[in-house]
Length: 160
Image 1: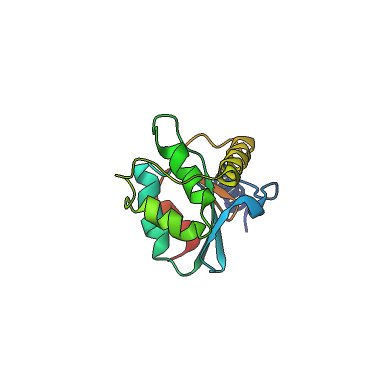
Image 2: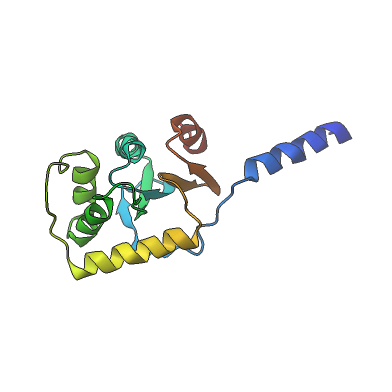
């Protein structure tokens, strides 16, 4: 490889690694785990974010993915924190996640929340804060951070 091609290769590699993320400091015992595929995706999400809901629908169709879901409810969505605590209070968190993210419970006025669900939501919030999450959805996959539901970037990272 000549010198010019090598420089281009190094620059391309650096561009790919901008925004890299390390999930090594994340306590995955605090996540909702959905799926059992070989491709691991860490997701910070908001139950009332329309783009997060699109992501939930997208990943529901991917058998090759295991999602590790952490909630980052945004203040501009007044029911989001309560919905996150509801999901985290349920025995079957994956089912509750799908019910909420599908909009099935949007007309519900109150949610059954436990102290354990509140505590877990607070712990997830701290994990998101520690990882400098500032937008939803935020994905960590294969050392990359993707903010927002950019299906093309996600598919490129995961492979079709």
